[in-house]
Length: 116
Image (cartoon, rainbow, N blue to C red; front, top):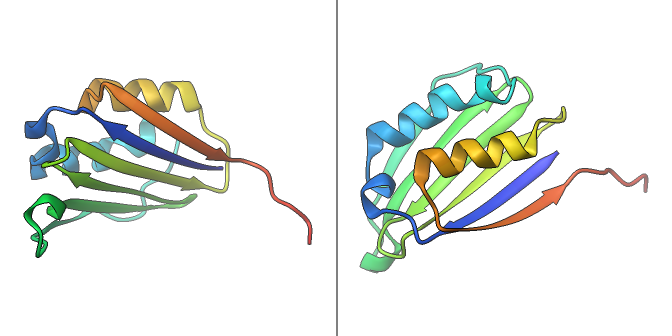
């Protein structure tokens, strides 16, 4: 499964908080029955255009990975969950809403493989 979330209208302070994003990546995998195999990696990116700066984070899980990219000046973030096993989409979105408080979420789910 590959779930992509584009979240907007988020509180800026949530998108700039390195500890909050680290904590999210550290505690989130077990919430969706995934297995952490590394510690979260977090980077603050200072872009040439101020509007493009943000925080990027990534965690390896036994099932694949979870990544997040925040854009505080835009009030948005993108979250990517890629897993070789199914997970509860509704529970996932509920936890993200609780943690980051986005007012809008666009989702994209890729769940089937094609035989070529």
